[in-house]
Amino acid sequence: MFIAVLDSCVLWPSTLRDFLLSLAVEQLYTPAWSSTILEEVQYNEAKKLKGRPPYLTVEEAGVRAASLVANMQSAFPDALTTGWEPLEGTFDLPDIDDEHVLAAAVMAGAGAIVTDNRKDFPANLLPYGIEVLSPQEFARDTVSLNPYIALRAIRAIATRSGRHEPALSEDALLNILENRYQLTDAVSLLNETRAT
Image (cartoon, rainbow, N blue to C red; front, top):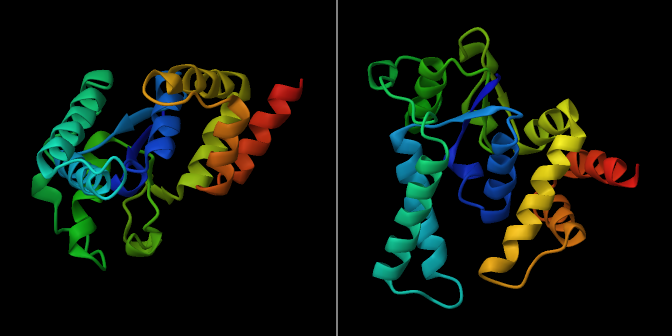
């Protein structure tokens, strides 16, 4: 199955993360990440939780962020890529802080890195067989593999969304994915599938 390393910038936005990981639950691809990516997710999630209602304390936000990462690891026990550290710093990327992502991709045998930070992964510096995709491109390509299965992911998210807050309808969820995250092509494919 196709392996994609998910950079932290596509994992801390809640609905985007839920969608990408739900596609993995449906076995449309295999996710991978490193311990450093998870640390970044946890840090950014705690920061996000402190700055939004209900304005959690630093400790509460930290506990919730740690729980999120633990849940991700539990749901995808094989996603954590190890042994990447010796490769870090060997790719000559423009930003040394992104080396760990590419190192993890190599060690995971990934075909893609999914990131909003494409400029720091120039194609001429990538090892053969690894491409860098925006979340918009990755969502489009993954949904197009089997839109019916991808639609199951949307329905699962909508069903579980009401556990902690008002439930999202499929339409509301697709609207968020299109307007907040610009997943226009993926949403178009999903809406076409819903119409059949």
